[in-house]
Amino acid sequence: MAAFANPRARGQALRQLRRQLSPEHICTDEQAMRTASLDGARITHMPEALIRPAGDADIATVLRLANKHRVPITTRGAGSATTGATTPIRGGWVLDLSAWDDIRIDAVSGYAHVGAGAVNAKVNEAAERKGWFYPPDPSSKNYCTIGGNIACNAGGLRAAKYGVTRDYVVALEGFLPTGEPVKWGLPLKKFVSGYNLRDLWTGSEGTLGVITRATLRLIPKPETRTTFLAAYVDEARALRTVKSILKARMQPAILEFLDRQTVSCFLKKHAAAGTLTSLPFRIENIDTPPAMLLLELDGDAAQVRKLQREVKPLLSEKSVWLKHARSTEEAEALWNVRRKSSQAMFQLGDTKLNEDIVVPLDSQLPLLRYTLELKKKTGLATPTFGHAADGNFHVHVMFDWDDAGQRARAKESIDLIMHKVVELGGAITGEHGIGLAKSPYLRLQHTEAEIRAMQAIKDALDPNGILNPGKIFEPFDMWEQPRERSWRFRWDH
Ligand SMILES: Cc1cc2nc3c(=O)[nH]c(=O)nc-3n(C[C@H](O)[C@H](O)[C@H](O)COP(=O)(O)OP(=O)(O)OC[C@H]3O[C@@H](n4cnc5c(N)ncnc54)[C@H](O)[C@@H]3O)c2cc1C
Image 1 (cartoon, rainbow, N blue to C red):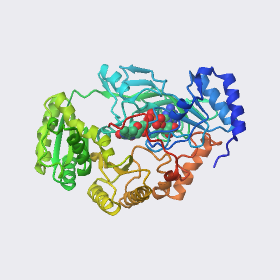
Image 2: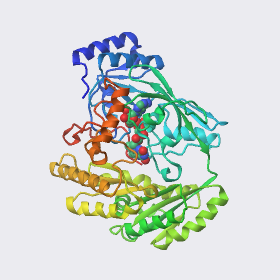
Image 3: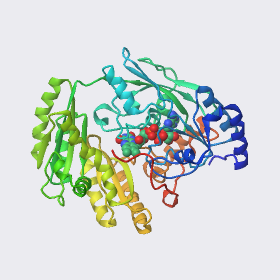
Image 4: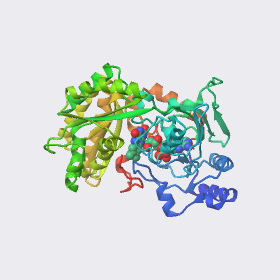
């Protein structure tokens, strides 16, 4: 574990920083510090300062001082990580890059040149205005930043067809922990000079460097898209349908699965609000909810027409009903089932642990059966939805944090899920990363030799261990930590 400066030395370092940066870029007020103390995992630890750098020179100054005086640095975008990756667990200074949000589209090369703080959805909106498209679309796209996306190698709903963030990063600019500026790659179609540290930084959760700017690859915007929602008596029928669609090499842009527990939360929320009749489908009995598939096809118009003819019989073969949106408004109404179901889960408990595990495609059904077994064993709900075309499921465990019995059973559930996933040949995380929450399970996924190799890279690039310390490698016990009750973003996706 890295040795950091004691509180007195940190105070001195902060005073030195104040002499070198304009005062408006350093915040130490209670409200700013609370915001910087957590992310979506709600594990909190107060930093000693929140720094909003105005330019490259500020970042270089901050890092030089932090590295010299051994002050921990946690870089922050929107703070929407779900693993505690953004919590400054060793204190120190939080470097907030959310204001670095410039976006410039190069419509000839098909590139977006963006600041680290550019919001994901805004990058795609800017690209679409010029006929281009930025496919990675985490559900948090309306607020998460490109810097955070790159640091976590974020996925999203379209990943099975279009890939994840790493597939779109052409070049990065940023800083080493020493404060020296670096460029990994250039905005060129080809670049193979030296080691590829661009890909090494991507997915390294802010532990190897500070990303300030990125060049992202764009693809031509699909001409049209069309949306289906299908209901199935149970998970088995829905997942067998997924298999038939994949076997037929259909490549939907989106193929989302929702289990019966998830759909039940969505329906019960509507029932409580008296809005069941406003839904674009009828449910005979909300006590026997269906499992569902939400499918979106995209491409040029002729291609989409052909695919929709082919996919309809596959979707409907085992279904109770199938809805095909005829307009953007109808598509939005179908999409709401997926968008609103996550928030609706909070009727099952005040805490939602969202495990973004991945299993091989032929293990999807065994995994789903296991979540139901777990529910029986622990008595805690395990609503699950996910990106079925790439085996990336969000298994949620719902419970009340202040109930010690429920908390113990929630921990047991997570332990068992992680073991099961690895036993099935899967990954303990497919898009959220390790952060703090998954660090106790790193050794389940990796051998000691693999971890040693990763640690050697960390030690070589950040010898004083100042960048995002405490993450990934050090097993963290989140169950006894202080947690914020609420988080500044609403869980409405
Ligand atoms: C409702 C909800 C839905 C979500 N859905 C998805 C999803 O579908 N797919 C998915 O992949 N994720 C999803 N996430 C997780 C999260 O939104 C992503 O991990 C996102 O990439 C984080 O971006 P951010 O700007 O919030 O990063 P932050 O939370 O601020 O930071 C995340 C990590 O990146 C590091 N970091 C941030 N900026 C930089 C930088 N400039 N340089 C170096 N390191 C940096 C931080 O230190 C931290 O380790 C979801 C989260 C929520 C709350």
